[in-house]
Length: 192
Image (tube, rainbow, N blue to C red; front, top):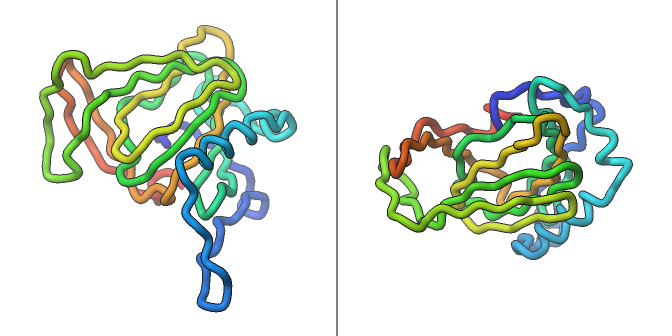
């Protein structure tokens, strides 16, 4: 999530995160990337849920959802011209699907070091770009570096995202040409 404006319902209406399994209840299997992608696609088709997201012309809005198998999930609204900036989801796998409008994803086909670095020189050929119209999505593994944008000048986009394990951190990057620089690391209390 970014530091953008959040239109989150009151605490009483936000679904609570799933509880962890105790010794008396059966363990829940961790969801696979395929299961996360199936979940976001199915959720993106829920017209009533998509319509319930308050949209703000100035900044992104979001609502936390209950994801499968203890995953973290979000419904996100993207005003025209907004985006995430370069980031990854650290050790979490994930998936997202555009529910309305269109999003563009720029990603890097590179395995980043997990910790202990500040700048990285990117090689030629690592840039990837894809358009994701309503109903289209993608899944990704750990340490997937990308930025997501709504490049429309006049149409809001809405998307559904799921991550497992629930996001322990998000690393934010800046990019100048072939140089990727780690700028900050956010923890859950920064976006919840």
